[in-house]
Length: 111
Image 1 (cartoon, rainbow, N blue to C red):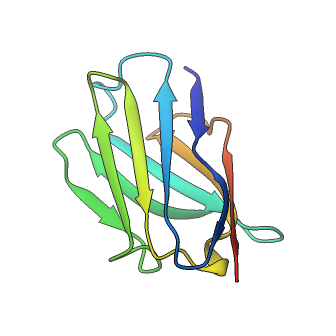
Image 2: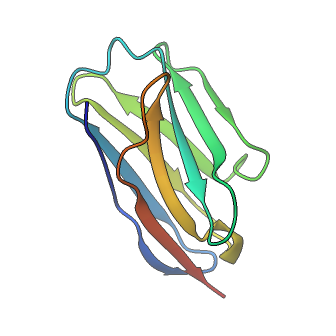
């Protein structure tokens, strides 16, 4: 399976971005799909997850600012990021449970 994340870019603090992850096959069978991120010089960390029934969970750093969603018909998972902070700067990856990471998308938030 291939995972292609997109939507990253350069944004000022307080701005918004919407990340998208297109999966090369049906995502219906993936009960949980997550977004992770890796900042320069830091370990990869979990950001948010969504189940097949639409239940979502967020890291404390993302709560209230990020919203994860999925569209099983389009094999797509999205991450709406609002009120971005410089510490959100990272490469963002989507990852279904028990699958490898795909290509990430770089988010840079300037102060």
